Image (tube, rainbow, N blue to C red; front, side, top):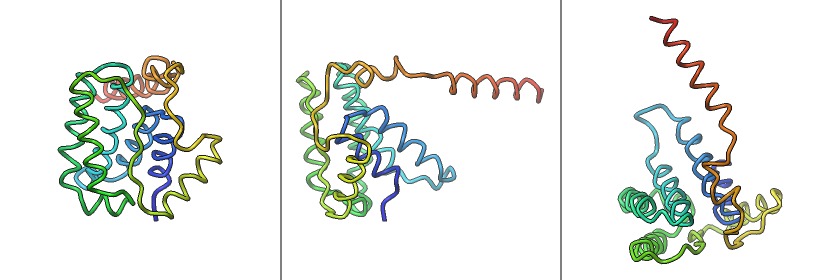
Length: 173
């Protein structure tokens, strides 16, 4: 019923709080659909994770900007949010509260998305156990590998792909 990418997004969101991984998982899932047929709901969920990533790093401007974008998308997606097993009114209330905290430079605290489908919750808890993650654990602010993931990750595959694309463009000239 739910894609593995979405379940894994929720597991990382509520388990190790690896918001960067949340972004990666859903972006890859979103890009599987053909341009012009991509579901905007995934972008909204990605932006929630990106906002929390920025907030945790005290990048309040980035956190605010991406949370505003997430809200702009998700306020128009009531039916899709319900189909994803989330409680729509509770989600919007949570995100607006988070935006207010960001806007007043309050420190980051982990939040939990309002999952209302018991089957989805069971699947997430099981997947969390399989990945040896503690469901609903608070973010470990001392874990630089997660807190500063964008600057500590291995980007060799991205660099190789960019170089291959550049070479291909040069060869096509």
